Image (cartoon, rainbow, N blue to C red; front, side, top):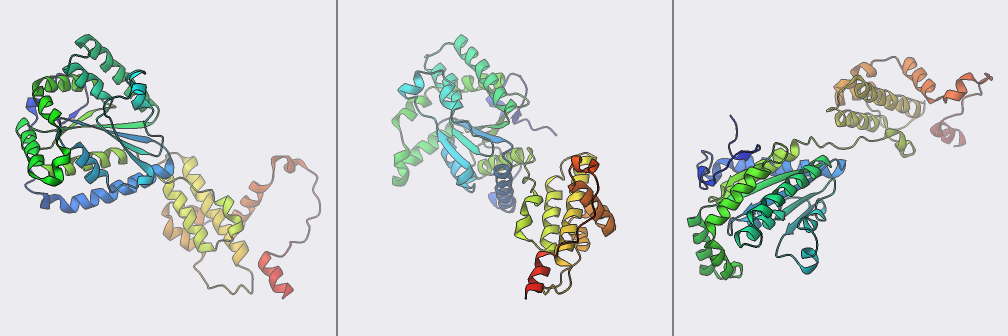
Length: 381
C-alpha cells in the first residue's frame, strides 16, 4: 500500500486532503513507546555508521506554519544524535551579507559534508513562501525560484547528500490553541510573537504557496513528507520513523580495516580472526566474487600470521582456539578459506609477498630461517 503522505511526483496537491489530526490508526503514545525506543537506537547506530563511512551527507528540512512544532521536533526527535556529527540551523530574516547574494547562497554554505547530519528549521523555501505571500516577489519569480530549488536539490543528491523534506501539518484551530497556550504559561511566554497573529491572517495564502511548493519540488529523489502534527506524540513518532528509515536506506557501513597495517601490534590469533570477520561483515553488502575472495584471503592471512607467531614451542600464553575454528564461528562466509591446508595457505602467502620483479631473478641458496621474536627472547634468557 502506497504512502499518500509521501509526495514524490509532479501532481496537484491540496492540503485539505491531509488530516492534521491523523494518527495512522494508533490510539495512544503507549502503543508505540517500545517502537520509539527501538527507532532511537537504530537512528544512533545509523548515524555512527554514516559518520564512520563518510559516504553521504544528510540534510533534514523542516517546514510548517507557525506553532507547527519545528523547534520541538528537532529537540525531541534529533536530540539523541551525537552532536559531534549533527548540526541544527535556523533560518531567520536574511542578514545584509546574505541578502547581497543569491537566495540559495546562505543555504548552500550550510549543507552538511559527507558523514554529517544537519537540520534546517525553515529553509531556502522561505524565499518562495513569505516573500510571495507578502508580495516581495510575484508568481513568475516564485516559479523561477522553485525551478532553481529543484535543480539545487538535484545537484545535492548527485553529490551524495540525502535530503529529507518534512512538512509539519497542523490545523488552523490547533495553531490558535498553541498561541493561547503560550500566553497562559509564563515559561512559554518568550515564544509568543505578536507577528504570529499577523501572519495567521494570511493562512489561506500560505496554504496555496505550500501546495505550489509540493507540486513543483516533490520528486522521486527528493520527496516531501506531509506529517500530521496536531498530536505531538504522533508527530514525533512519524518524523523519527521517516528519518531513521531514510538514513538506513543509504546502507551506511563501517569502513574496512587494513589488517596488514596492524602487524607491529602483535595481536593474538583470536583477535586477528575477529578483525578478519569484522572486515567480512563490512563488505557483506558488496557483490561479486572479488569481494568474497578478499574476505576469505584476509582470514587465511590472519590465521597464517597467528600460526607463525604463536605456534612455537615454549610459548607460555594462554591456549586459545585454533584460528580456523575461530574464523569459522565468527565469519561463516570464510569457512572455505579456513579449511585450506596450512601448507597451501603459507605457500600462497609467500608467493603473494614476492615482488613481480623478483620472480625472474637468479635463485640463491636459502638462508637459514631466523628465529621469531619470541624464540630469540627465549634463547637470550
